[in-house]
Length: 617
Image 1 (cartoon, rainbow, N blue to C red):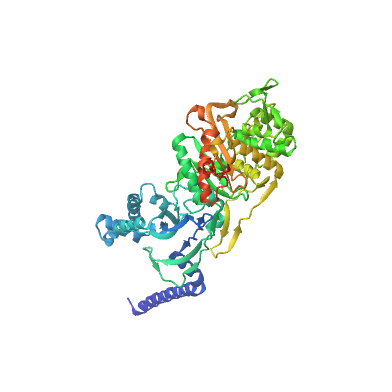
Image 2: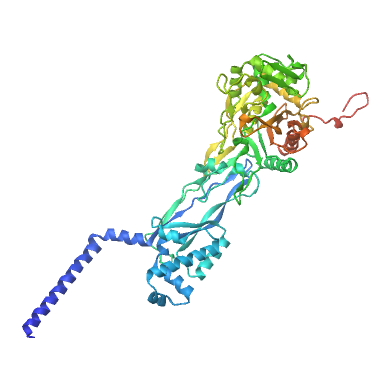
């Protein structure tokens, strides 16, 4: 080959190399200078990850500051899909499982085979350490739409550390352990339904947790961090952080001392009567503050098993004779009766037309308006309701709050049901039935709030269960103040009903079992047949919803409450509000008065003794 040809070839190769390197240089300049920002963002996106900084959820306490719900530090386990498919992460786990070096695994197996084996190993490790079915690593890897996936939430630190060690021993990478907050309930088994629960994302779903979630939850923060292939965090100037805003604290109107008294009595009642359910609400009749609310069955906050419905606001029932306070109050307020007005009660049996038949549990002839309530005469109540008239009576029922949601700050409250006159649901017997507490559906909260309107002189108050909301900066966002909804009856009418309610507890009344030594109690018993699930099929024979509601001290009430026992399983002849529910009320009230610092207002009979000269002391 001549030298001239050789030179030409060398020149051509050199020219090609120059052109190639020139093009490469231009490309480098383009990438490094012209498109620097673009490719920097891509690189940053591949090595940077966003982590959410959980806000500290607000605490919940009772009216005296006793903690009812607190936060506790827990650990969440998170996986990153990008790390799960990283071949270096996968090779380390496969090498450990096969007893080989990482380089040997790279030589013998193709990447996809390694990734498939890693998924099997990771799934087996998670199932072993956390329990089967917690998460499918295969599904996480297959779903390219998600990068950050929660594996386990709210683990105690000792258990999370055990998982961390187990994964490290197996060389399973791709998982991170992040500190977060979980909910802790210092009084297990108490106020469970009212407090409610949070879900897996620590969002309130029921009870106070759900109703006030906007206050309690706060606002999550975030931070961007640079991580290695093994999920380790490295220092980076690109790291940034947006702090979380902690949630607000909620103080309830609940008195936890009284709550414990109520729940203890309910538990003993369940053991004695085995009811389908039992519920109780106690409140300050002057302000509308709910001081205690409980029911059985309830649920276990640790296992999330049991009845989570808040029965006193979510369950409707026909109240029976406790509803007669509305009938009497309307008759007094309309001027159709006074306490001494006498009504003929037809000796216990009354007929009107073909369909209306009423019976009393005893054959009463003439009863005063006050004794109609004290003796719980169905016939007498109908006589009063007829004087009031169906349209006016309906207005009083609505004014007392029935058929309307009280808008208490809890989830799941129902409005009850009130039949409107001159509609398809109103029959020729409806007035008589409603007057004695049938054909009307109420909640326990509605009943005790109506009773409170009698106790406080005729004003319907808005029930409240939240006393104060305070921000994480200690700023008061909400402060309880008593709120009058409307005047229902005159003070004189309310006082006359109160006198009748005291007669219910006195000798000869139906509620003697609710008497509390040292105090004058006003109250009313209720015994209603339990309706079948299909209301058109009538009522269960021998099955009752029995109740008692009352307030004390009658002359200056500080506590009003109701006990409702659904289908008690005691001796059939004693399934009445006066024999089952009234003694439960008395037990609660007797313990509540000293707890609330209320001194006796009535001197016990045995404390009165004769003194010389014929007087007493």
